[in-house]
Length: 119
Image (tube, helix red, strand yellow):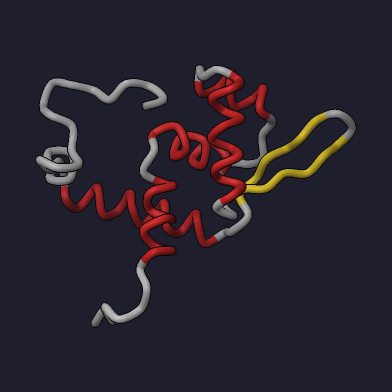
C-alpha cells in the first residue's frame, strides 16, 4: 500500500489530535458502548461536569459525536460507526507493538510515570 503525500493531511492530523487527548479518548471509548448523558459520563469517568462538557463540545465540533434531546436531557452518541473500527484497529496496533509506543521518547510516557487525568 502506498500513501500519496500530495493530499492535504490537515484533516487527518486534526482527527488524530482530537483522539490524542486522554479525556476525549475515554469519552469516545465509553460512548462506543452506547449513548450517554453528561451526568453518566462524569460519574463513570470520575471527571467534573465542566470537563466532560468541554470535551464533548470539542468532539461535536470535530463531527465525532452528536446528541439528541429527550425532555430536559441530552443523550450523546458516536456519529460514525467507522470510529469504532478505528479504535479497534488502534488497539490491535498497540497490542502488536507492545510497549514501543508507550516508550516513544517524543509521545510516550516515561517509565514509572503516569499522565495526569484530564491533561
